[in-house]
Image 1 (cartoon, helix red, strand yellow):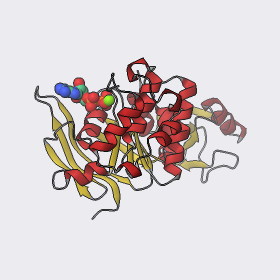
Image 2 (cartoon, helix red, strand yellow; image 1 turned 180 degrees about the vertical axis):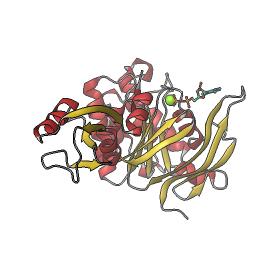
Image 3 (cartoon, protein in one colour; image 1 turned 45 degrees about the vertical axis):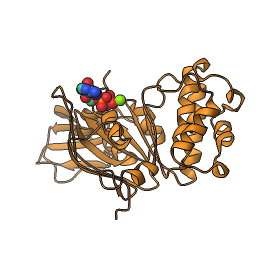
Length: 303
Ligand code: ADP
Ligand code: MG
């Protein structure tokens, strides 16, 4: 029994054509978290989600949802998770009301326990309850899929690229609703290729690149690391200590070499060097160094 909402061990997927989409993913998604799976297109995010949804068969490793192994207890695993797929798959000739009722039926939710209109109200589709789904806009379809993922009241909600095709105002409503669910105890996992989106919503972020996890930490930790930059400065005289007035995170590396770590979102190299000059030191040589993670972020979020 695991305390994680989702637990993956060596999860691997090689598609029939030979494409290795997941190369042995180890990942724990804590219960109660708002977790971001961040990575560029083609990283393997949907493959991972679709394995959890039972839409793609893994070729290696294990996956566990809310304590249920997806191979040993597939029904319980499926009941524990609601998935909003990246693709807008929906039943064009059913109304939103019928779509939710059918889904509830599939999960064996008794009529008395169904919350069809409540869910439609929550995603602002109550006035569209009885129109054909094919007449809904892209944003409305996305919200219908969110409601559909929730009919069986799962403890884990997964949204795969949820803002695709959703305009800004409705996006805000969608996030408000997701935040409400999270505040009510639902574990939320979302995939995105937008750093800002993961940053704004998620308390933890794992970065996926080419089928592997390359970073996984609290958002605040990732961001503080990502914002760091280092100046390595050689000065014109010997020092025995870091002179006052310099960056807090300054270290003396040899008699004449200082490394000054600063947050590049609030300072620039010019300001850091000006402080060195103000401390009465002449600058003989300067080089810069980015935090590794920033390179990762830049690489991953480059369009
Ligand atoms: P993401 O959701 O992060 O954009 P995907 O999981 O959709 O990434 O895709 C990961 C890799 O697997 C990509 O190279 C993609 O082309 C490939 N892939 C996805 N689905 C299939 C499939 N059904 N058959 C073969 N290759 C696939
Ligand atoms: Mg995807």
